[in-house]
Image 1: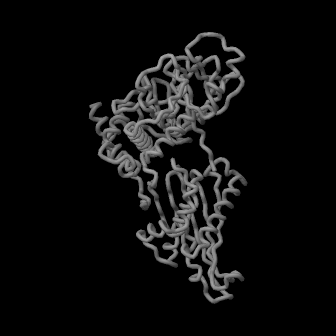
Image 2: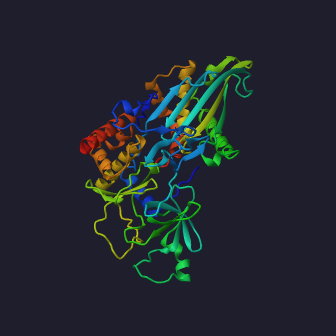
Image 3: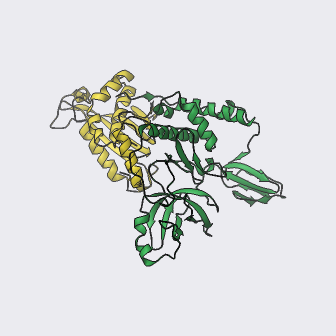
Length: 196
Length: 293
């Protein structure tokens, strides 16, 4: 994760502010910044979405292809994640620098979506033990700070699913699902209180 | 816990909302400025094929026979006498390296720094060993530019009691071209906070100190909790400065104050929303035009 150099006095100021539920930009500890969402941005995917939150800009594309189910779960389809940290996001991502963070985020996403309440994998099954849908999810981080990624990416999955037409989620249910999804729990320990 | 989601909106061009009296001549790299050879070429231009061509993206400025292009987005180029706010990145043998958003790190020599207590003596080896006690990596300082080296690196000094290490507050980073050059860059705003407008684009917003401690020289950092009312003023000012910078308005004490007053009807966290940001800056612009005219 990118580290920000701060003086002792600045840190003390931020910590005291958070204790009084007032962050440096006036938000409370539980308030989010505005999120900008755009769907159907990549033409050759089944569904795609672009999310902007603060300085971070993420692009996600989903391609649905036929495959064989995994041996231990013959009635379910599965998801494959690939996260690419572009060099334009941060100087340390140049060349192979972004690979570590990319694998870490991809592993977190695997854990998040291994849960029955986040996505119904049985609906991806076509015929048991023979055919199923495999969803290849490609994530591109091309701008911004490195906090908050798993939370934003799971939010993107909901948006992208609606663009896909596989399952319908309107904005209302998107908010409710976000509240109960394990993504939120995962993101809690990642977000810093003073927030970026 | 509500998460506000929105669709992207096309940005409205600013010129159609408010008429400008003088049209600025904007150029991009490669544009011909003039074919008249009688002009002297200044910064941001070069001569090619009997024409004067721009090498940066910005507005053309002409002073008698000198043509230069002032870049819109640029790193800070130091000039003697500028006030800057910088962050210490390294502690070296007899100097500190300070990050000031310029092409090269600026330098603060040990001999250019005031000793605590304001004594005047030659810096000894003990002072050199105690350097880290004065300023560490990550500390913020306000300083003045003493000299500019031939490679463009800037040498700073804090030889006055108003400069030195900064205590509690908030730093806002904007483009250096947005900070207006004025007589003084240290302002105590009537809304209850103070602001230092660094020429390098680093703006420091901090609670107004109750009494000026003359003998401390700015070394003893006050780590007592700041009151909630002061915090709210500082957060609101910080958001106003960010909105002015996003809308490319010049930053000086009057514009920041007008923006603060225009933002009072809204909640502090709402100022960050694009539509409210536009509304506030529009009102500020109106007020500034009325004040000039």
